[in-house]
Length: 544
Image 1: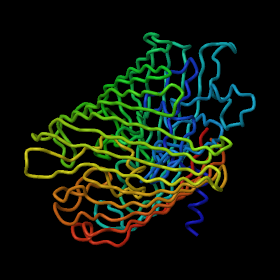
Image 2 (image 1 turned 90 degrees about the vertical axis):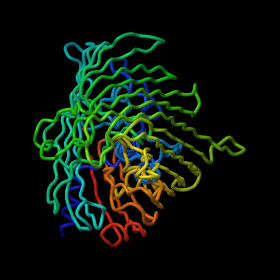
Image 3 (image 1 turned 60 degrees about the horizontal axis):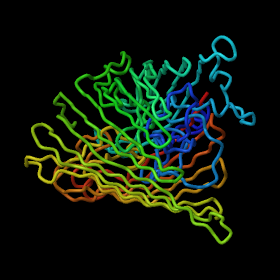
Image 4 (image 1 turned 90 degrees about the horizontal axis):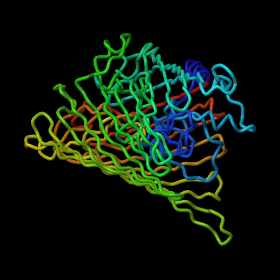
């Protein structure tokens, strides 16, 4: 009976396991171009799903564990992108709401009706006024049942509900300036355990910034942004708003961005703001006004190079995280991260020039250096995804494989720290949607199968094999905190994730998922013994 009630509530609320797919569409002239990391996406937000896309995200999704599948909703889940040639109409809702593209969507006289479309790009004054106001948002509900997860306090069974409301106002001042505001109210109820820091953020400011056009060069404007803002780059391995959590991650500071048709460049200097960025304690960030943590500075340069008419995409980035406080179980000091990402697809045609199969490939890696608590830092990560889609087979199945390596410390007593710091990732999309692990000191091999029985239904199944990268380091939980003891077996365990998503239209979707985690010898020998972990959720998302 209780489950029925929860399912009913879920359907009324909303689901947002979405994989993050960034849009390559150019925004309307009055809207500053989307961030560099989003250049590659085709306008369809991926549904967050584990393994490949989320396995979005995210997007989660998009959701977002092993190889992120095709997702179209949030940055929180990122399942691998689905290269199927059959695409629904471009979704005007983006993982970052300030990148929404209602201008091009509404300009099509045959566009399907969307709830709330009359409140998008409303002219202020006469009908031809260059000043417009857009109003919208999202309601999301998720019911969770967890058993034996790697939570603080030992193995437990728990049920709880998460509710989130986002509301935004977007004022466009012609093609030279913009004012954007977005509020959030995130809460938890019917919970058996104390909430985690990312479960609650009551009545706070999520985004509040001003964009000013500085110049026009090479046919594209350069913009300056100041204020509170979410950030999302690349596949969200390092920078993500973490949509799966109830509290979306945000930052406060400065950004310059200039996007042409082939090159996108972003440069930023920010401080993390809410608990999604690691700020504690929850008692301070629950009902109080969120304030940036000025002791932590996160800055960087992110460039995306798009091929001229081809499927190739190249990201190059340099990121600098400077933490002036000595916080237990959190990387301190000064860490520099330099890396890149490459992505491409290749179509296979039959004798009649019909596309029958599609190969997709993505690889990313970064090296980290600097200092941490007096030790020299030398760490890094590497990941690759290879997928194959059969476009003429029923359900358009896509089989993909993922490999991930995040370095661990080889000598805890040495003068060098080799543990990779994952910065601000969408881990839910890559390291199992049950959210037991972070990408530090980790090997992850996974297989994922995506299928679309209908245009509105997406299915994902993903299997992960997890090991510690080095015996001499800890296991790190989803928050990046060391768990267990040094030494012991490298075998962490295996996880299997199943996700189904029904997308009624861009306004509404519902997603359900079930996961199993079979613990290996390291967990059994070094962490309080526990049985197999399971997780079930139903999430519904309504956008307006």
